[in-house]
Image (cartoon, rainbow, N blue to C red; front, side, top):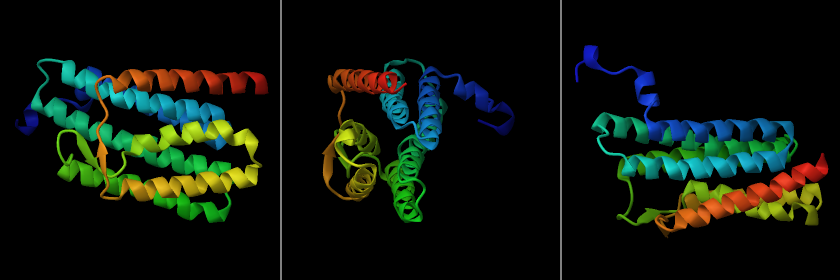
Length: 212
């Protein structure tokens, strides 16, 4: 395709799977906003929906017929860029904010963002080990685990829990960059994810309601 025949950038953005990806970005941006504001249950809800949209953009893309090669390539790049925001920048800001921006939390935030950039760059070059296996732990699983762990926040003091999630996120970053084979979840697992996101969103929504 010559330069004068190239589609506009917004023409690609209107592709249905990419709209789904952008809804995931919206969820992540809301999560970042609430994390900075110190509203951590709302930030967790944001990142949970970011995961859900991240799963569904791929499902929609695979079911759509007639998508061009360029649309597929653009969608893959857009998804990767959004993943850095959702599963790198957001959890890093979450950690910094929960740690009350203590200088000792900056290295952890850097590790989280760097891990997401390295892992996604590696995946973009090499892809899956095979059709059903990732190398290392997928980034979206990090925030799903963080959301579950955050259900137990009230059992700890703020300072203790901030250290616990610091350690947790660093451990998950190590697994992200490891060579441990991890199954690629799909098929009926999407129903499990939908239930998980709806259930935890409801729980954290109730927490917000009773705190109001």
